Length: 105
Image (cartoon, rainbow, N blue to C red; front, side):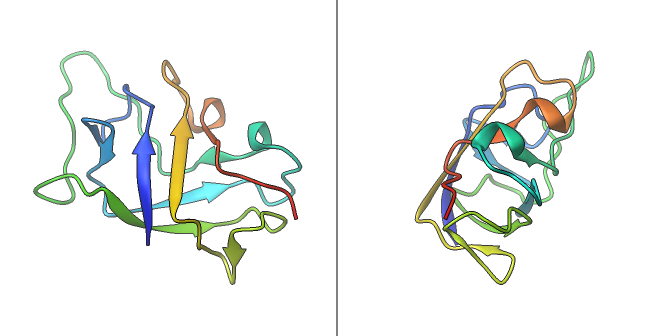
């Protein structure tokens, strides 16, 4: 499990830079750079939405499935980085987010 810092303030799962979903998936099967990755678990807030909590409280550590095959932290489709930083504030779709922790092998 990685420590997750989420900078995607307009995701319904984000509360205080932590995730209330329980687990996320980082996409980017053929990623060469971090901009080729995305948080596939992103769900944008709409007017009047507050966060959607799959968990009662946000977690600082979270299970992360990773499809970025060439990332040095991906082992059997699980992220093994100690810290993961997801960015994309202002995103309206998952493709506008990225995993800033991605490092090509």
